[in-house]
Image (cartoon, rainbow, N blue to C red):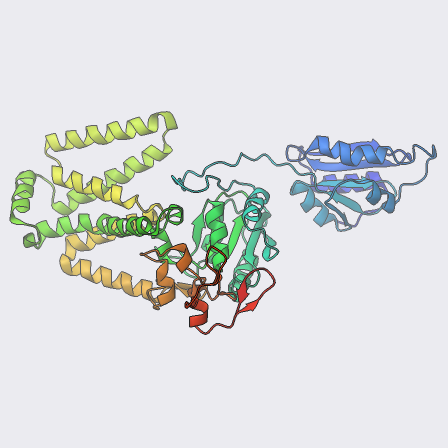
Length: 516
């Protein structure tokens, strides 16, 4: 497309030749000095009232007092527009991108350039509690699908000049806005640069959600374990930025991404930081135990029947034997079918309408389970084990996808190789986790490699006053998170902070913190 000319009609015709869709409207009016003007905008994502009051009306008043028909100049347009976001452009392709992004393009006869006015107002839903991050204690706000609103929710919690946003675009057709955010002077510059580089290298037509970005950021394309953290809560996102991580907000997605990611984060919850350290440690231990039970219980049940009956107490073995007597299916096939039914019920309950999904899923499970036991297809112990395994897995919501796959794998090796298969698969998974990393951070940190300082916020959580430094595994430029003063404002007597013990040189960074 050629550059604009000073003739308004030619410019409108050229731009409409590119933006030929019927929802791209052209609003023509005449300025007070008699010059014809036009505004191009996408219908439905522009605040028309603000556009008329702050753009069209001021231009219509130009020259009225003088009563003449002087030509409209670029300076007069800039001075009359009452918008904080005004850009002058000469590239027609960039003008088209701005219009499609929701901004307005102002053209005037006799001026060979366009004025982009930021009057976008896309349809968004209200900020509400996220469905995947429900907490009894703590903030209830959640991210929504508008990246600007999400940025404001982060800025609301981190009122620091060190908070930086880098705006990027990805997707040839969608031109999706992506905000990379970090705390300058805290986040590792190498991680931030790698994240920006990988996002800039994405060459795909359409990006509807942040999960696409997470897939491009992952160093391995076919991995059961994820390498990028996700959250829908602004408080969790801001806390991770304060630890030294890099965050990614994607327009159109309520799920924010964080990097680097640790496997331990799946066992943690936002509520752990709003309850006592003792209760948080108990909850994390319960989640860890429940995750192991969900993975290994079906496999051990099958293994005990096929290979090692002595794994179970004699009384329990006799009870199970009486329950499975006369069943037509083998233990492996029985457990496989029950797990398959569990997955089908889970998918049906999610896809069904909200008003009937819960009732139909509960009734379906009860009716199917009772009928299957009465008909002699499956045993009661197998149904109990599958149900308990499914409940335990959902105590760690972020681990459900990987846990479901691993449960199938454990069941397969238990039915074919017995206890040896379970041990072999566990050793392989442990080796894989020990060698896996993303953005230079090991996935099993702080256990491998062992970082004693970071163990204070692992399976066992210490009090907030003990977490004086940021996690060292993220290589933050500013390690000190909590000053050496006690809550009463007096310096502790006879005690040294962790920073002083570690030999870290502390100097004032001008923002109330300490740097190395």
